[in-house]
Length: 191
Image 1 (cartoon, helix red, strand yellow):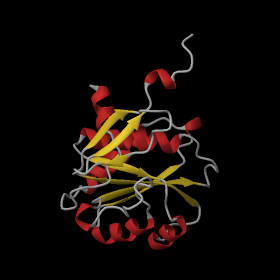
Image 2: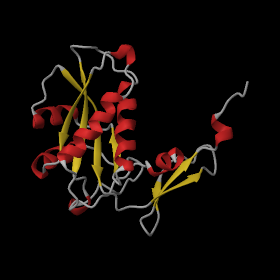
Image 3: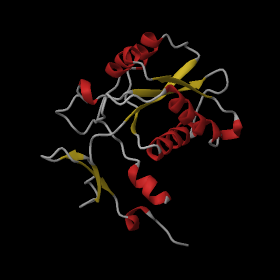
């Protein structure tokens, strides 16, 4: 059921690093992004995929993890992602990438969940450092990094208690709580 797939598609930040995602699986996930809609069908997105421990160790320090968790600097070594998909915009095709990146990322993550995997879209990136580390040509703009792996954390969705109660948090059992606004608060009109 589609609703269950959406509910399982959480921002997972802790993984079983010993579970390796095959490169063919990463290629298949990018294939889902390829099939997704693109503004004016320009298809300006390009992708870098990695399941290599060496390359992953170059990518990891260039990312910021879970801004609301102030005392957490990201997953420890055995809980780090075992794969990454970096979404790039090809500036030779287009200068502004609007919604293409989000559509592609959601397609990738829904495909990952369907395969029993999980991931996290990361937009807080040291882009210059990552470009240097991976020797990314300047004609490509780094738009998003998707961290992927076999999730080991439990993520619980709950309704917000107040309009300002949107910060995710972890309890003493390390369960990750994600408040979501109620439907009647986000639908402005029913015409």
